[in-house]
Length: 427
Ligand code: ZN
Image 1 (cartoon, helix red, strand yellow):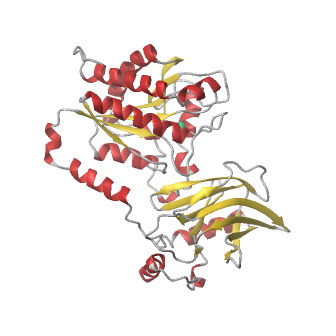
Image 2: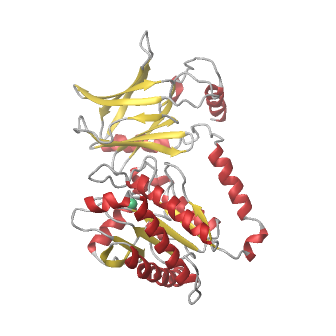
Image 3: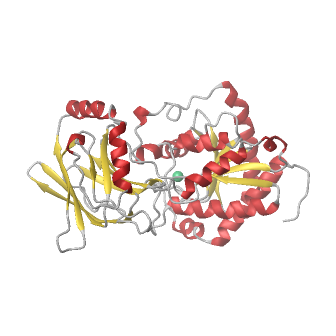
């Protein structure tokens, strides 16, 4: 397998145009387009995903501008086909117009620096019959074709088991600037000075990202984009006060598994963790911000459903939960967490007091539910739903700088109330 990885690496880095023999890899479906110069940062484009049904076969076709390298795998419960590629740009419709041939829908976006992902939801067990790239003749575009054929659940699961043992087939790790930057930051954090730091360290976690878009608003706003904008705006306000250091779990449109978000906060030895969201619910009349804290039992049905949806982020992004630890999916709360939970509730109270003065809040602004992302053992954590993308007024508001500034100031006041009760500052 190592040999193979080396071979792939060479392939990706070389300037040669080649189709290397990959016939032995059909099990996990690695294929490679022609390698490209790594000096130019012009990404290949994947566009026009379309579906066709021929007899029992379902054909997925995507147009490609530029060379791509891809691999695919399947996941069960629910059935999904996951297609990973060296980073590309997407020019695809955000939603599938009509489910066809067992394909219910798809999502796409950055999984991590250097790797893009398409997750295709399937209504039934399907496996790949053939997959290939039609090389461009005189036309500038090439085409990726994947033919799916129906199978039984038993055969599907057997395939999964077999292909899981082939995990060594990984796309080469890219040394992106972002990764280097992160590593440098982590290194700094490990320095001994951190014990005597005066400012408080806040981790702000913009929810979703990359292949997981989160909610999509009535006017087409993406939750993943809104929360990232808000996070950056809040960061600015907190840092300017001089009392807070801020670490964002993501700074770009990329996917971060829930478990990793928690890990970032723990590794940073954060004093507080704030996860930002802007969800969508059935009742379009409901609006306003809500602060959530972790609890085994949800405060109401709406909160329970919300937590259930948010906890599906990894599922949405096509992460193989069978191969992950159960840490995230199991949210039973242990004793160490109880004290943290009390602190989280105190912090939530402080934030609620301040945001109700500054922005529109839900009629019940503090709720509880079993959010996996709030499961950091020893860091007080809240999840802030800034508003609802299912409400047009909220959606419009969430996109404005004024709202984001007000929210940032409210959070600053909430943090000051929590950490520096009784002291007064200029705002
Ligand atoms: Zn969300």
